[in-house]
Image 1: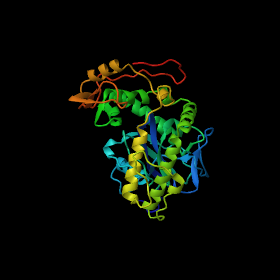
Image 2: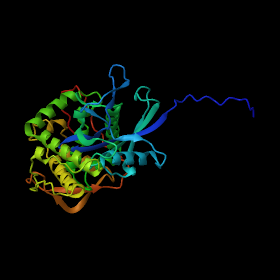
Image 3: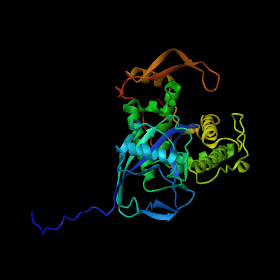
Image 4: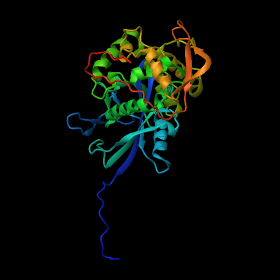
Amino acid sequence: MNPNAKPPKSKLPSHFNVAVDVVALTIKRGLLQVAVVQRHGDISCIVDKRTGRASEMTRQDIDFALPGGRVEETDQTLSHAAQRELHEETSITIDPKDLIQIGAYGDRGRDPRPGRTVSVAFVALSPDFGLPFAGSDAERAQFVDVVDILSPPNRLEFDHGQIIRDAITTVRDLMERTPVALKLCGKEFTMSELRHVYEIIFHHAYNPDANFERYAERIRREDEKFGSKAFDDQIKSLSRAVGFSSRGEDSLSLPFSDVGMRLSSGRKATRDMDVLSKVQNLLAEEYRRNSETLGRGEQSARERLRLHFDPANFTRKAEFIPGFVEKIPNKTKTPASGTGKPAQVYRGGKAERLDPPLNIPRRSSTSSKRTTK
């Protein structure tokens, strides 16, 4: 050993970090939605579309990010780190086994802060994550329509817009080859409910090259017309107040005088409610109730953002795949409309892969033809 030998020089930056990001996808009111947060602090890291590099900018109300953060030494696995970050920032609880890895993102310039950060991204699917509450690591947490969050004036930090697009592509590929679509259905479901999952996610509005702004404008106008945005804003306001109270940052100061709403469940929110139990449960109940409402009629903007497969043909193909779905004997479900013939109820089978695959015809984002199956 040469005592005069110099230690080898590392080519790594002085700060080299490993992080995780989570794309939590669900379907609400007929559209694909994703969980996003607004981080603490006055600075956002926004990518310039021309240069592809992120720079620090003054934070605005239109700035959002995916739940995520750095991997800690105590994290057993990357998926455990993703589970922890999702819960810390949104209060959403998931099983690490339900996380699907999308890929790693570490291009130079994706993060303008000192050092270099490589993020491993995951996607999680559920028909009902519940109402997100901002945790200790976020200012706000909410679910937003994918077409809306990917459209101006909204801005996503870092390369999170690309991560969302890649997550949808990954889920689409898996939906054809595995039973992952069942994660967006309840434990028991009708064939119509399963079909709608495919019809929504494979709509060309979610193609990587889609003009998201075009679809977002239609949804925003309709939500404004029917008051859906006002309802969402009320829930966000209450959620934020509850989050502050639960962290002990402030005494309970729910802005009921500014909200002035009576919930559809018939229960009136009062100052006397216990925040961490009654208010959260009531908000979650109301969120689910409102989220179940689809567009108003077949010509609604939300209804137009899904394909329309032939029901009988889709059922035949799904039932033909061994182990994909199985009927629950003597069990039917009345349609949500309250009218029509009761539908057969199914549950997931034991297959881990779909053989043959359930191939879905892809439509170009610019095509004007309607796809059927």
